[in-house]
Figure 1: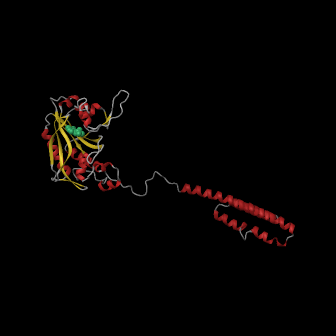
Figure 2: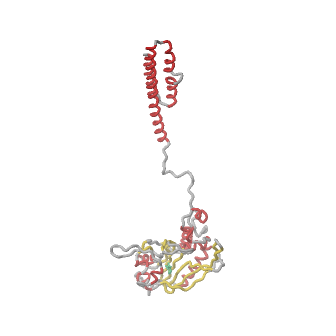
Figure 3: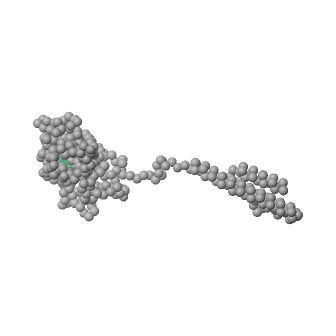
Length: 357
Ligand code: DAH
């Protein structure tokens, strides 16, 4: 009887001291397994008188039960401890970059923007910027759009709700308001370009509600239309890197220029392919003209002393033509398959020395 109690104590002690599942398994076999100490005691009961047999049997059974319970508890504790340690050891830092190399590419619009900036920088133009959210004054009034004139509607403007004062802000419909901002805050002469995003409520194969323009402005005392034409011819030759491009320069109307002209590029569409050079279609790529005296006056510049030209080029359309993109809407569909096909390496910094593309 005492022997059983001693063994039970020893077993409980060993179980609570055990520090691994393996150790615990060994104790289980040693004490309560088929050949375990308590089983052997029970097996040896044969020679005892019935009274004693029952008593020893009961003690051995309760010792077996106690040790079994202790082992189950200890096993649970060891497993929990093991899990905690493992979690600590294997902690994952979610801020680390993933193992697969991220794939990306420069969007053709941004590539073309960089190419255009490189060409104009070479001709001595500096880069100016302005806000995407504009007011009526900079987007229309100062650019000589008459009040209530249909030209304001022509731009398919996205207006914001009027504020408490009843003033409606808008998403700029062109980069021309930056002409106004730079002329008001600076002093002539000016020779600048303005790359930027513009917005119009319009969508088809050659129109998207958001697109990109590069505005140009050259103001000095003797600037004339011949300079404007030279800048375009030089630009087109350098940008397309071929002399096969056919353009036409055609009279047009803009409120902020007089006279005004647009330039188109000859192209053809063959199924899903778009090609410049020969062809039967014209794609308009820019608007331009001599800055209207009213615009200069609105900016505090004397039109009797200064004059010059301005232009606005469609960046995405130039990208379509140069890189053969058939549908302008695909450019902003955010489809990585499209970008993998038309995208550029981030290391291909376009410049006029090592080449544009
Ligand atoms: N702002 C015009 C448009 O988006 C383009 C344009 C035409 C800009 C003539 C100019 C310009 O600076 O002189 O349709």
